[in-house]
Length: 286
Image (cartoon, rainbow, N blue to C red; front, side, top):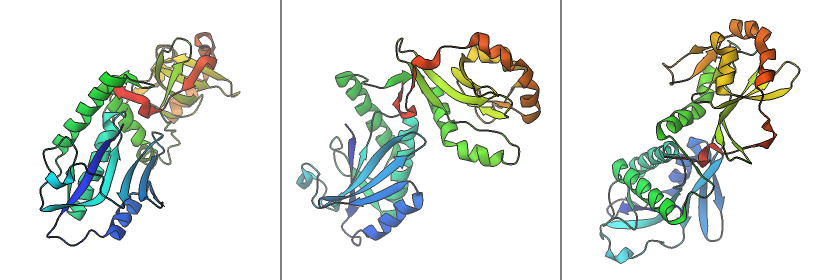
């Protein structure tokens, strides 16, 4: 159940120019616009976290009890369906877009729980998000979501969002920046954070890993726990906590040297056939 956040505008201002609104979302680069008979849907498709959400432009107002609201504002039939069962890191990214949208087009916001239409305030929106998420969990449970330490989850999400930036920073140094992949044992339901490592390849290791998929030079795949991986590779790794805590780098020279110990991974290999992939957006702050 999303939070339906409605946009309003002061009556003294000109009519909202939706052509400019469409340009706003086009420039963000990850929104697609769809036209139907009933509405216009502006859909965000987040490939890094494999989730989507949408803004709607409707023919009629969908605001309940609209006639009880401050008459100086008009509903522009424009709203955000804000997902609540997502990591707080992603919610804050959406808040940042809403803030920019409100500044760019002189918009105010309204939710059914507000006393009236109000100017954008990130504290109010954050409180609304956390309150409604907690109530949803109390009423319906976690569903297919997994609770995860909030601080660690934010750092993992920050890494995932920064992969392109990190890849650009290390461009020319032949360093792989792998994506984070949460995985779960389909039998025990144990889950954790994993990434992929190819033996002999200089690599950045994301923060708070639990597992590493090791691809040897014959392209055999072994799943090993973090502790066992560090038992074999720890002396070759350098922590770069100035970027993020618990993030490590295997530089090119050390990657070549570490090939000689790669055979040791075999004795630590976990049967990975029971493990399935989760979406990072399916982890929820504890």
